[in-house]
Image (cartoon, rainbow, N blue to C red; front, top):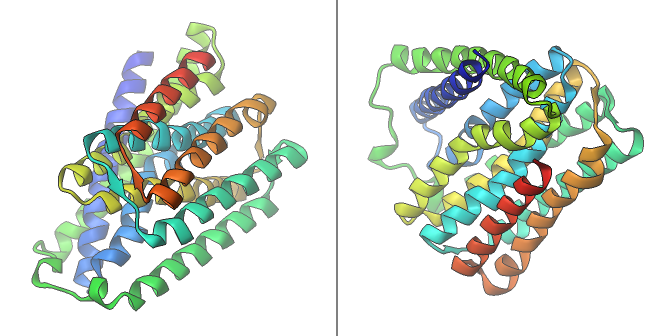
Length: 309
């Protein structure tokens, strides 16, 4: 039954995320928002929605290791696994925005998260306010930036919703309900399996749960690479890592303070910062993340998983 909860919860989360992104994107198109604005806000939030619901549910149930491990593990997975696999499919040629805005913001919020954890091994409501304020500021800045890009902001005939308003709203509602139910079953499965296997909730969350909740990013990025939309793939990864910290931990710690396992602070966060630092020279100097970087990222991810198991 534990396996059914875990696998079933993951499947429902993925399906829920797909419905949420589909409904929200259609509604955004209906209100004539540009593709760039939709990508920077709705898609990044949508692919992070599984992590958000899992962390909130875990926080409410008192399983802080699941909430924190889910976010840290997902951020490691997004760069090591998702970005690594993506650039093996097709190299990513990096645009200035990713170097000047996206990566610095991602690394800054990651360091801020580490500093908050180190100070008291707890994320308080005050720190949740800081994260959520940063989330609002980031979204506002991205939308403002997008509107200055006239070429990207121009609307074409394909940027109109082909479905009815009722169907769009129904997709949105199904997505939210599926995410809520999937998160509940996933957390139940994780806690039960941790007890059955004799391992910590931290390890299960950093590995299995993080992999499962990163599947939307993996799918989105690989599809984007196949379609030669590699900048979208990179933006999806960097944007999701930003959302994972600012949105997920911000909202979760506003609900109730989250205890942080010292092992996460002293070990796992350094891997998260390390893989983020690794890709910067490729972005900044080579202006491309290619096959060699992809192989190293994948190997690094698998070594990390091996070491924590």
